[in-house]
Amino acid sequence: MRILVKVLVRNNAKWVPLFKTMFKSLEGLADFELWFYENDSVDDTKSLLWGNVLSESNPLPGLSRTQRLTEYRNRLKDHVTTEADFVLLVDSNVFFSKKSLETMLETMKTKPEVDMVVPHAMVRPCEFFYDTFATILMDGTHCGPFTTVVPCSSSKHVRHCHHCTGMKPVIQHNERYHQFKSCFGGFVLLRFEAYKRSRWSVNTPSDCEHWNFCKGLHVIMDRESKVIWTEHL
Image 1 (cartoon, rainbow, N blue to C red):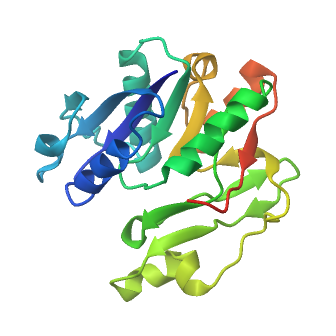
Image 2 (image 1 turned 30 degrees about the vertical axis):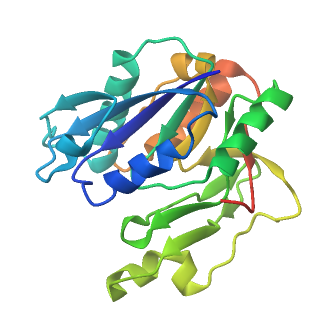
Image 3 (image 1 turned 60 degrees about the vertical axis):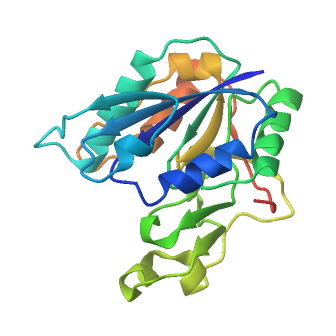
């Protein structure tokens, strides 16, 4: 089984070594081919990367954050055309266990109608916490994340952190699968065909590129995608 791993990374030297250690723990699970898109880092990020690295110095001035991310994700997608069974999209500051990925792969194998799966649980450093694993279900319900977060080192992060604020997820834990309209795209597994045919986009500077990616996936594949919640990280 072959899995392409696509990673955006910039100024992330603090977490890249941990990310590498995590991937070493996955050895034997699949044949992984890692591709990093490194963009204009000013720390030691570039020297710490391994595998295949596409490095550009192009900050795209005048564009919003989501517009830049959209462009970067599409550049990495267009640059790597190697065939594979699945594509794993993961941010370089997202950490997960072998069991989480095994569960995602098992879902893909047993549910051929599903093109993309996302675990509703993860570990993410608090200082990088944004909309992590928030999802929008088909009925429009917004679901907060269920996340184990590295404890806050600064009070400015508390308002972003569901772990700190005690917020509870809307998704019911006794329901394993949920179809969604949109999800956070920092850790998702896709079938290769779905990834090849999909594309990130933004219509306005404030758009979410993940929302439009999910919306496009529903349209082009005309199939259901589901989010999987797993207790085990």
